[in-house]
Length: 306
Image 1 (tube, helix red, strand yellow):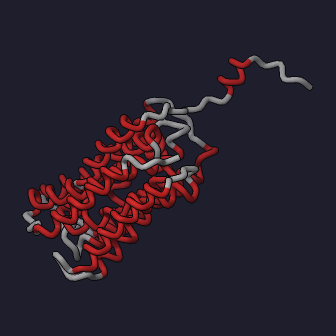
Image 2 (spheres, one colour):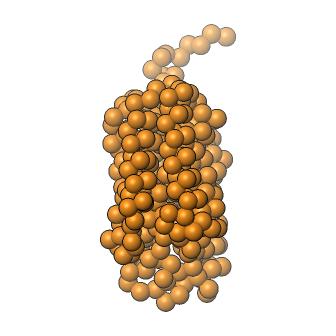
Image 3 (cartoon, one colour):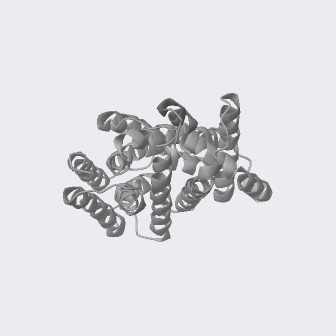
């Protein structure tokens, strides 16, 4: 039997979202996401004055899922059954993995320290992008990525600002969860808008988020003040939702590994906000490591990624 359908009918029967590749635009849009993410660790430390790490993890996901659900309903989006499992995987890693591990870490390490340690994210993101994201970073890209990761590891283990401890291990777990989740959501953002990817990930995981928040309520809400409530709201609406809208969008049009390098600059945002909001002392050594990492990002941006 021959196919009698017209090209136009075949095209409309399988709608897709295929963003045009714009490296510079992807970097700029991704950087907006980095600015939003940069306040996550300082906001988490503030929120810990009124909430437990477990409630922060589940509670902010509930708030973000409510907003995401309203947006999806208002725009009449249909449930993406074909991508449900990948959206669930991205949700588990980004909705629970990174927030949970980083919240525990922020109990024992300064936010500025955490910001530098999480500079290892671009290397991890590039590795996962090469493993199952369909990208092929070249030797120069890997060299600069490894250089940046080495700087972060040396900083973490040197005791330049604090003694190495369990907090760095939790931060490493947070980076592992985030980088894997970034690649999954970034790949999904090639077929549908980035805001829709994080929205469905939040909605799909919302039953677990709600159950966790209810279970943690009695021991997780510790008479929060205004600052803790504001920080919690930021974590829910900014870090958990708005940041991913820009981040997924940027990765979709600029490339996962390439845009992932921009996140090395997140250290500066976190360090600055840690000093401004938390009064943390930022040592010259910390600034020096952050500057070195920024130089690596500048060089890595020019490296070829297939």
